[in-house]
Image (cartoon, rainbow, N blue to C red; front, side):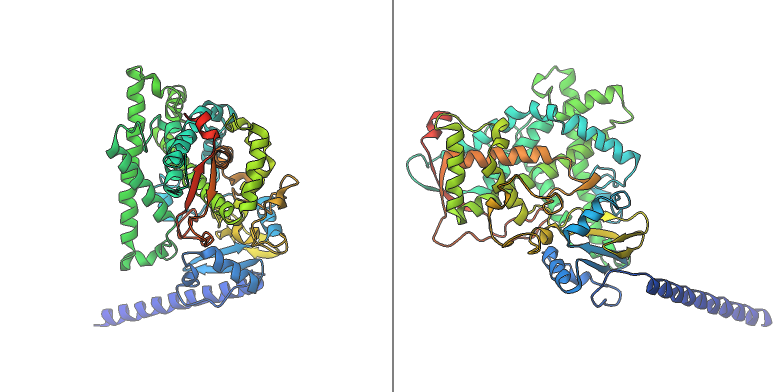
Length: 509
C-alpha cells in the first residue's frame, strides 16, 4: 500500500515537473518572440491560425492583407509560419541578399513527397548537391539552346496542326472554336513528342488508352497541386480524416510512377529494336547518358525530369496563349497592330518561324503584358528559410515558408501606371526591371524552362494572329476572371470566332 502511494506521489511529481517545464518553455519562447521584430500579422485564430484565408484565389487575399498590413505579412498556417512578400524591392532582397538562405523548398507539402519522388525533383528538392546536379542536367541536357533547337521542327509541326484545325470551316466565313482544348492539345503534343516521341491528341495517336491514362494522371496532379490541404500544415488532422487526401496522393504517385516507367521501358526497348523514330527524344538522350554515368542518371531522376517537363511545359504555355488571345479579343486595336507587325515582317507568303519571334517587339510586349496581368504562377513556388534572416527590415526565423505574391507585385500602382489595364506599349522600351516582372521567378530557383515556354508561346500566338481574323463570340467582352488551379486558368474557357486569311491557303494547303 505504501509502495503504491509512493508511486502515485512520484507520478504526480513527474507530471507537475513536466507541466512546469513546458510552461517555462512557452514563457521563454514568448519572451524571445517579443524581442524579435517580426512582420505584422492579422488576428490569429486558435489552432488553425490563418488557414481560413486559404481561399481558391489566395493571391487576391494576400494582396488585400498587404494593403492593410504592409508589403511583408506574417501568417500562421496551423503550426507553420508563413511570410508573404508583396513588394518588388523586398522580393529583390529575397532573390539577392537572401537567395541562398531561401533556396530551400518546404518538405511538408505532401504532393512533393508522394508524386515528386520524395522531394527529389528539381522543383521541390531541397537546396544542396542533389539539386545542383539536377539543375546541371536540366541546363545542359534538356533546356540548353542546342537541345531545344533539335525540336524546333516538332513545335512548328504541332502549331501547323493547330492552324489546320482552326481553318476547318473557317476558310470562307467566321466559325466558332473552342480555343482552350485546342491550345491544350497542342502544348501536350509538343512536350510528349519531345519527351517520348509520341502524340496523345489528334491524328496519328496509336494508343488511345495510354493517352487517356496520361491525361487523367496529369489533370489530377494539377488539381491536387493547386488544392489547399490543411493536413500539410496541421499533421494532427491525419488522425481525424485528413489522411484521405494523402491516400489519394499515394495512389496517384503510384499511377504516375508506373506510367513514367512505362515510357522509359519503351525507350529502352526501342534501342534494342533499332526504332529510330525515338532516337532523339529526351528520354532516349538521358538513357544514353545513364550508360556512362548511372549514378547521376538513375531511372528515378529521369522520371523526375520528365514529370517536371510535363507539368511545367503544358498548362503554363497553353493558358498563357489563352489569356493573351482573350486580351486581344477585348482590345481589337492591339490585335490589329500585332497583325500589322507580322505582315510587315513576313508578308503574305511566309509563315512566322521560331528564330524570328524575338525580333517582333510588339508581339513580345503582348506576351510580357499578359504574363504581368495573368502569371501562370501567381504565387511563386514557395521558399523555405534554412536560417534566421531579415526580410524587408523584419526578422524571419528559420523554418519559415516564404511566398512571393508575383500577382500583387505585377499590379502594384507604385510600379505600374494604370496597373489593371492591358497596355502592351508599357514594354515598348524592351522590358522592365526583373523584380517588377517575375512570372518565372528569380534567383537560383527560377524556372529552368523559360526558353522553352517563350518559344511555344511566341510561335503559337504569333501564328494565330498572322493566319486568322478574330472576333468575340458576342457583343459582350471576354470574361477575364481567374479560375481555381495551380496555373491560374481562366474561369470561363475561351471560345472565339475565327476566319482564315488568304495566307492559310498558301502555307497549309
